[in-house]
Length: 257
Image 1: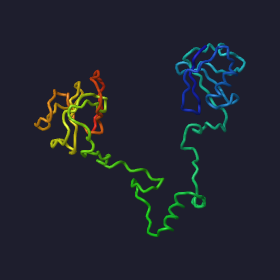
Image 2: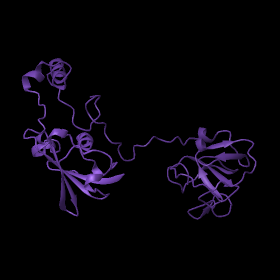
Image 3: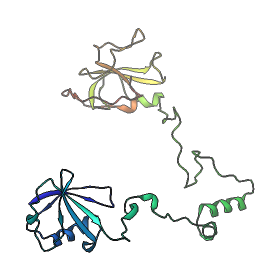
């Protein structure tokens, strides 16, 4: 078994390490190369090369590859002798030679369900109608959706109803991360951005972002990283005994400070 490289007179590509049994005849070799390069066996002329030098012409289809002392790493160069070969002049590799279909205006005008027809229908219904501008949402199925505007995130509810039923001293579990602790503060915090009502939570483990102090004012007491201010939607009160520390990082959210 040998692994040889193959090149082709009409192709830029190089076929690397094609494996053949040395008992394969040159005729069978050509048949297999036909499947790799598209040139029929009858139109192939094979030259054995080693180190860029021609060392043999594989002209006898009845001889086995071993007869020519072919070794792994050598190259067989395929010469396509067909003057009308599809691969000539880049026919199988140069995509610029491909004739692309272009619909003439008359044919397109006769088609149904086109964008042009849809625009005509809109103008017939409303003479003052104008095509929507690109990136402006209008319901046009052919138009890209606009990117979300900066600061257009979903509005977070911050009213007193968001912390209803939650009182200082209650055990709780906070998301993200299922962090447990107890509520240490309920109400508004003037120093926090976003305003509204917050829950100050004293965590069982150092999984928070605060020490209970906001802009120099102590809202509740706890050690560094044992506290956090969260929105009510992220806190569940109930029977939550102290749990083992979850060391996974939590995602940052705008409704926790």
